[in-house]
Image (cartoon, rainbow, N blue to C red; front, side, top):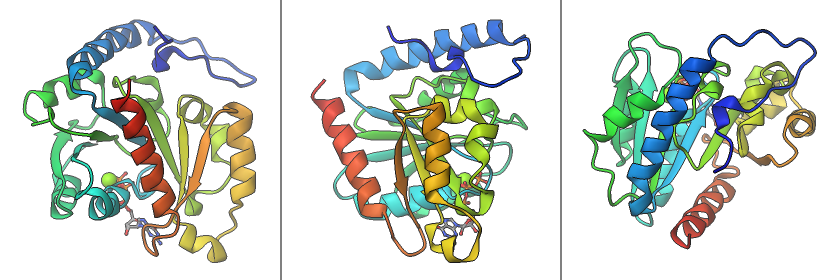
Length: 233
Ligand SMILES: Nc1nc2c(ncn2[C@@H]2O[C@H](COP(=O)(O)OP(=O)(O)OP(=O)(O)O)[C@@H](O)[C@H]2O)c(=O)[nH]1
Ligand SMILES: [Mg+2]
């Protein structure tokens, strides 16, 4: 079995004592239970992470518009409070269940396991998990996903991968969002890609704008390719 994402070592000059390892071991146990539960259904599970406001929900909505007639999509979306994101996603025609974390800054595997009892997932091609907006804590919690995707918006600054390395170390795809704003902000796609790949050389990178549609074909192709690979496993 591959090493659980939550226990992957981070890089940096100062390593703090990790006092949360027992909690993470318990989480990894539940993440494995999620994998076992979903295994017979061949569902591609994607854990979508980012800082607050980088464009995760907007990307879910745009993905729905483009792929809902080709693939069966579902979303579990986590927020500390409100049903707002779930309402937006359902308006785009995708089945969605809101996970209200009650103030917690990340989704834990046990929340997904509980949510699956209330969500019709068995016929899905893709189950997206939109994580709570946060570049730190979600990196530590394996949710049983096949791939972790991290958005970084052009408005956040291109220095973030080195400051929040574990998020990028444990992701397979980095989506640079809000590319339509590039003419207005000091942000270099080359610089952010170089930094992120120094942490994780295997990281895929796609640049998108949910506003003008740039890169969304490439994003949808990435998703369709991963679904194909999942179904052929
Ligand atoms: N210019 C621009 N704005 C965008 C784009 N995508 C999203 N936005 C805007 O960014 C804001 C935040 O978008 P959301 O999709 O709610 O972001 P989020 O990551 O889901 O936010 P949280 O769930 O709160 O973490 C909204 O005002 C969106 O309209 C984009 O591609 N370009
Ligand atoms: Mg959102």
